[in-house]
Image (cartoon, rainbow, N blue to C red):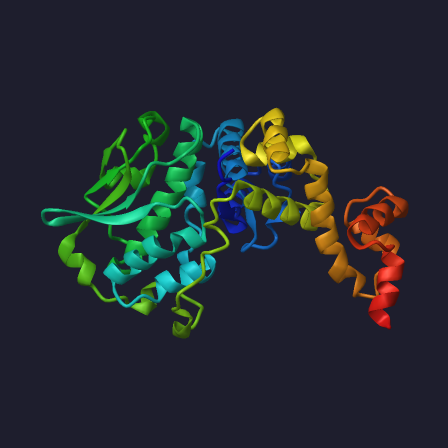
Length: 336
């Protein structure tokens, strides 16, 4: 089983806000993709990219908003955590694009952005986008707007590229979109790309254009190690822990869905690793139970319920397997 692609939870927010504005049943759509609202409350939290792709596709097709990703992409650059802050506070257009490309993997583990050159033009590029054609289109629309916003921070909101290259093959879905009337669009490209005159790359950043609300001191190198692991078991543990922490609900069918594999394939993979799905759940719950037991304002029954256990006895049996003692005994030991 290959490593599960991870993405920051904040990338669902643009889609959610657009759907709310269109009066769509957001919670229903999120649950169908295993993205309950509680899971998205922490924008820096990690979710399975497979879930985000399915959500974007399902939302666009079920609502008929076939350019949904376009509207979602207008979430301001600076709202994208430290990554966005660093882009906004880069000293020039070249530095802003370089920051975007070099730090994008802090946002999505499989990000592939780069700057290419061709004669008097440069191209701000995103490599091949994963997923089904419908998923690719929604993600690409989001990214092209985010990339364009980055350029417009320096060159101004009225600037539009001479040429845009899209991996999408469905021109009809975009025919009524005013944004794409301002540029020559090349469909079925191997990459997503925006053409920029080379001389424009030296243009200095003007902070007045960015509407930024963060300090210039926030321009810094950010860590990406939590997204770049190639170990599929490690990423699965991370997703399970995050889901248990936020929602208490995750069965093996949902876990396989997050991993982008069948239940049988997931079971075989875990067997090869010497563990089971139930062991992963118990480990995640144990890791969350220990700090909770330090909080004496919570009863042990409340902790058991928050962790998704059906009753206190079940919690006690599971906890005892890790520590050799009951939760109540463990709490007493902490207090002595």
